[in-house]
Length: 79
Image (cartoon, rainbow, N blue to C red; front, side, top):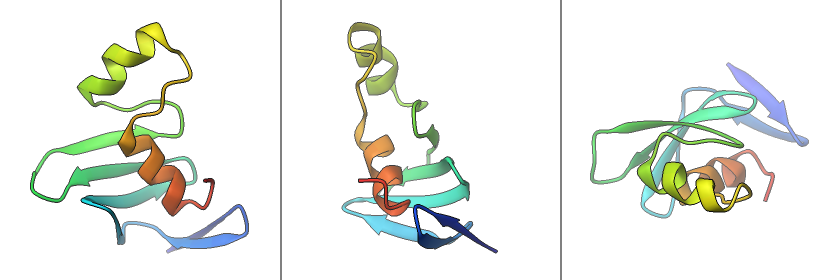
């Protein structure tokens, strides 16, 4: 299944490598992001992430984007 985002076609549930991260797009604004050497899947959207870095840093800076969010944005063609 494919979804078109920002004029870019992306396959859902297919792995996309971004640096040492693997992104699986699960919807038009969300995905699962996995560290290449880890088995933990982080639920990531364009404006939130399950990772500790986002949970702590976003308290001080509401515009903070962790690397998992940035990877999802890159795969979706938004950055």
